[in-house]
Image 1: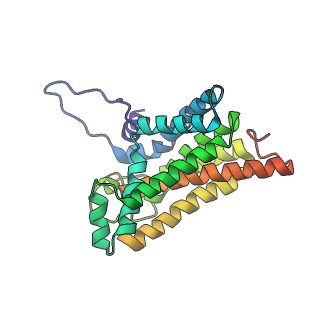
Image 2: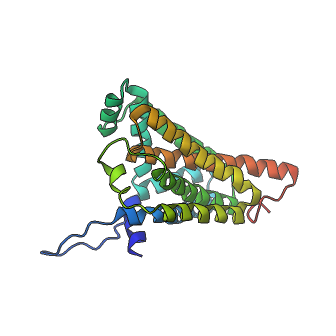
Length: 263
């Protein structure tokens, strides 16, 4: 379970690693082994957000409950993937050359493109979540966080890095392709079990969004980076939530049973 702990420690602000004592060697986490566990961490995060949203919905409006649950997740994760999305938006929107874009990616300052991207994803997340209730909301947030992280992990094995070094490159070394593919298959099977036929557009929407961002990244900076992977997670998460909202409305109107949650 050390790999799961490494994944959870990397993706959240939860202090899971034991502090080394004086004179004790500090062992760096094996991130290539931790990557296949990203989706499992996403599942827990999604269940937390969904549970908080449903609980608060009993005493507050859905919009307020959705906003608070999103803010809580931002605190737990340290807005880790939001930062990647903002950096990518600034670089791709404000850079004129590949070199300029790579330099902007390393800049910690936030620009107009980044702010606009963050506002967009947060607004859509709150709007989509507030349109759901009960078990559907919990299942949707769990699916969104799980599938989006599985999507980002999958993109690591199909795209080359933009740089020879950096955070996005470090955990590609030794990454097991069979493990990442296996995780994607398990996540897809779980989505089908919960949502039924609705899972198909959800999965294709998330992975399709990820593939489009990879293609854009290759055109803009020659490959992917840690920031691009963060952007993939955010956009894939939004895609999952929006598609579930649309699908839930359609299945309700048509009287179609979408799966266990939509029954």
